[in-house]
Length: 111
Image (cartoon, rainbow, N blue to C red; front, side, top):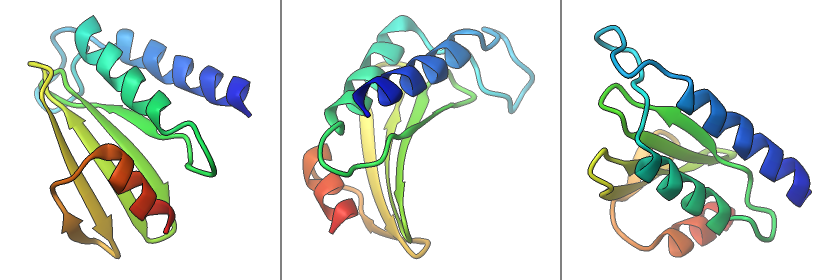
């Protein structure tokens, strides 16, 4: 399971590295290595129990959206180009929390 997660994460990071540094207006932009390192760290921090492997999605400003999904719940970490991070927990399409530590939000996801 760990090897599968590692391979999936590496594929997603490679995809983000291959993005254009100057994309079309609303297309994702290539993140810096600093942002990719933060994304890797957040993704790996959830590698325990039954927490699903997150999706890593590039943003138009060069950030990364890290998203864990389970049923009607999802937890998102938005990593901005300056390295700052904001979290969001959503259930049935409605925000539940915009605060908290990632470990607490992932525990909620699995609850």
